[in-house]
Amino acid sequence: MEVGQMQRRWVDYTKSLFLEGILDGQFLQLQQLQDESNPDFVVEVVSLFFEDSEKLLNDLTRALEQPSVDFKRVDAHVHQFKGSSSSIGAQRVKNACIAFRNFCEEQNTDGCVRCVQQVKQEYYLVKNKLETLFAMEQQIVAAGGSIPILELSF
Amino acid sequence: MLKNTKAATKITALVVDDSKINQRIHHKLLENLGIENQVVGNGKEAIDVHCSGKHFDLILMDMDMPIMNGIEATRTLRAMGIRSTIAGVSSHSSLSEDTQEFIEAGLDDYQEKPLTPDKLVAILHKVNLHV
Image (tube, rainbow over the protein chains, first blue to last red):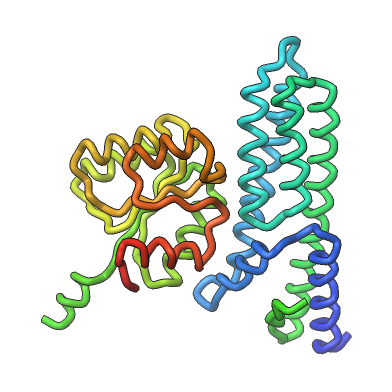
């Protein structure tokens, strides 16, 4: 595949992530912060998000398995997850966290267990999509091209 | 001589946040505006770095942190006579009770996360720090 074609594929793929609501404008902000002094800035931040999320998902699962659930603790984890997902623009993970907090407030264990599943599903979806996006970027760079600058007007 | 004047007008900042993701993003946001900055992971470390004699023009302070949260850290820094600009940056709504307590602890400004270049510039303008 020639570079121009790879770049067009990258643009279409990125746009689809916004149209499906998987990512929001905050992800564009991150892309705009990246420059020659930090060419891997987005990958770095997103990798930190992956590490953090997997730890939080484990903590959440464990906290909800306790015979007597500490909802304050669960809520603190979810609040943290909401913050980190909004920092990288993982919009659907963030929205799942917002719904989750309502069940924490109601102290609804079944609701919380369903929400962990929902958050997990959204997390693995965005992880998969971002990994695909980064692989496409590597391909472009390996072929001697540069990553296109995405227009904000769509 | 010229070099000295330049160094004297350079803005310095301290990022106080326990999330590595936010540490990285806030560090880069400041760096892109030419603001030299140091990063610490909780309120206690922010106090310690001041006790060691360092001074910052701007402190970006998170609220929820282990060991010492942003509210207590801000109160302590003010009690120590630190007059740097302290901007609270957290994911709590600016109307929440916790946020009000945070502001009353001695903040100059409060911004909801995620922090963006626009929000950062708004903080700088509000306190007349020009980059």
